[in-house]
Length: 358
Image 1 (tube, rainbow, N blue to C red):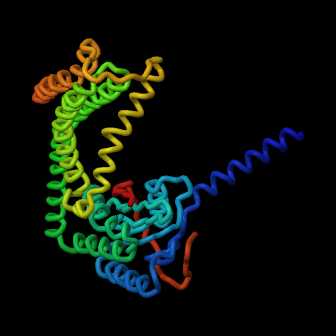
Image 2: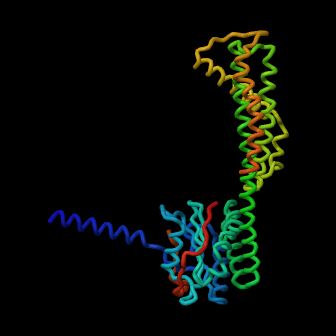
Image 3: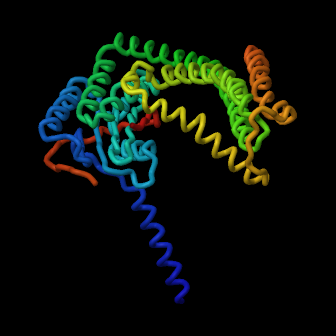
């Protein structure tokens, strides 16, 4: 009997938990600002604009802001909230929900069946990426939502605007493939540069190790440094030029935005000293320690076998790798008000729309 009561209790808790999980806010206002990201004036202006648009066209655009999703995806939360409120008119399914989760830094545009031919997934994505997110990054939440709703209203009112926006979205989609192609192409040269730098750096470390154990003479050491640094210079060109191109194309960040670094070059000298002297010397000393070699200096005589094995490798293999690699590259909580008359009209969503984060 006790086991039966225990199982009944567990089943009741499980059912209660599932029911709690399925609770989604019932929107009594066309703009529900549970996250508190709008002030009173902004809330009123936005509500009046969306209410006027609904009365004029019957298209229903609702805005909901929340603090946090609590381990639920924004797509599921928006879809369930849309369904719980039946946004849009029955038979027309002309509702649209803009959901903002402030602490998760996510936003979602959920589109009803009837509006999907106008606010396509591509258009919703573009509105989020180009209109909402840039404003949200500056914490200008009202501006982002106001501009986004203005664009949506413009598209729904004017078929020509929708057509132009679709064409722009399609052009943007094709430009993404161009970006991917250029990025992959530049990545080939970037990989070549990285390999040349790696081989040259090994030769540089070997040069310091050689002079510390007497395998490279003080007289020959400048030539050994030149043999390591000369191909490294070309490797840096092959590496950083494509890298700057990739950053400019994919992140729209250009070198002229770093011109302030040229005002004082002490940081550059310090960085070069660390990368080209301090770190190679420390690695060379560690290698000497692990191999059990002893420290000594040679003024004139060098060990040709050590030079051919360690130093020439860095120069010749780096140069040959450049040719071979470049050659292969050619082949490779909710606020509500019962006094408001806002409510859904029986519409539904098929899950269309788009999400984004900032």
